[in-house]
Image 1 (cartoon, rainbow, N blue to C red):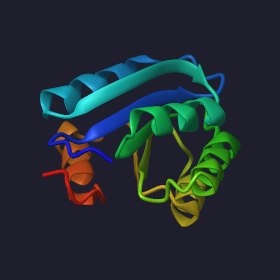
Image 2: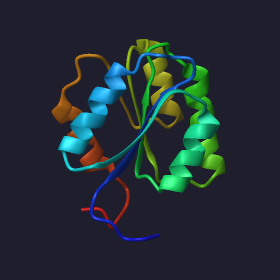
Image 3: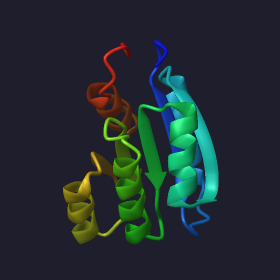
Image 4: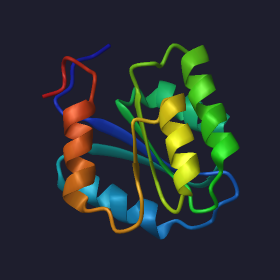
Length: 136
């Protein structure tokens, strides 16, 4: 794995959710914070996201879910494990019901950012939780 100085984040909207504005705003926030961002856009399947995560060698996957695509997020987590990507930090944002937030965290989502989360909370969480030793 090549050394790099910036945290690399893949951002995607999973499933049939067509709401992209939140994900696009988060991309800009992360870029402004000095992170490298790969934006996949809307209508992405778990397989497409994992394939891109491998190709791009990302540190973080950020999933936007306004349709509460719980099953697809779980499938994404399982695919990451199957592909030995346990060191990739997965975060979610959007309108996810509280009971699903708890279950997603139990299954491996590192953090969930509901609407009204601050830019600082998202950036600080990512910076504090990237598991790559070569990222400063």
